[in-house]
Length: 363
Image 1: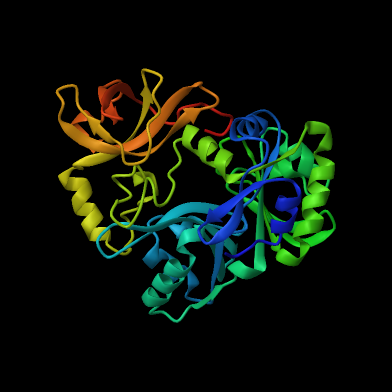
Image 2: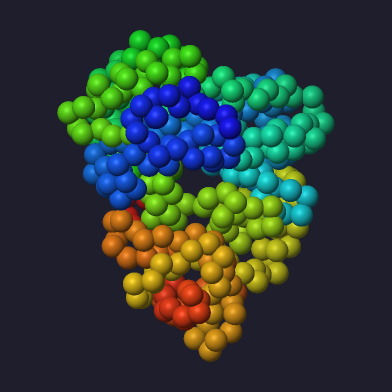
């Protein structure tokens, strides 16, 4: 397994470690529910250095990005971030990602850890315009400082006025005496906060400075277990569970990042899918009893017809009830429709509901 620059720190903190996307990662420290609550109420720090960073640069950089991603990267200006996805030749999702415009000819794509090599190969395959492409994932560490006290914590460490960095914007500046840190107002929790990209050689020092700054707010290290419950409460997709090479962005509710005023891989297939109507949709649902849905559990209509399956499910620490995501036949995807999840041969009632499951300051 690969290790991040902070693996030794996680072990010293007593983290429960496990393999994730080929990396030895902290799953939890004091417990998923407690860590989840820390992020919702105060501030927590995730080491997500297993994520991938790919640089695309040169005069044709934008041209390549427009060709391979569904969103309109031409709308980006320096210091802005965009959520997007790569599509394959059949309209499925190669990966979902963030696109950072560093300058007019330089972009950084932040991709899922499990897809780094796949994405890099795919981008090179589609690079008919001779843009420069570099996988810098092994050189970069990424910390996500998330929660309502994240800004107050990090403000102690930089002269940048963090209040002046809007959502989905970033600055490259000095933080805790470390230069060239990308300070990005983004995250995967719905709790607010920043994601920090920097050279891996600085990881232990920056980690310690952040924890010293956040001590008065009860800052805690947070594992990937709580990252999953936090993202699911927001209805955010997890690649490999809720989206993959067989699901289209339209089916996944990502029509808002699928722009048909430009040409991209499989855009015509998706255009036809949109005009012809979707046979299935990704929906959110809440359980009406105490059962907990899990990945691949089957979903049925009130008449006992098999209509889909669960892609993600958990007990929501905030709502104190079980929630999930799943693909179901479009005819049953209306809000407040009652469906049934088959759990250990028992039909457990659930209700289709609007996403996100919880409302936050940035939802």
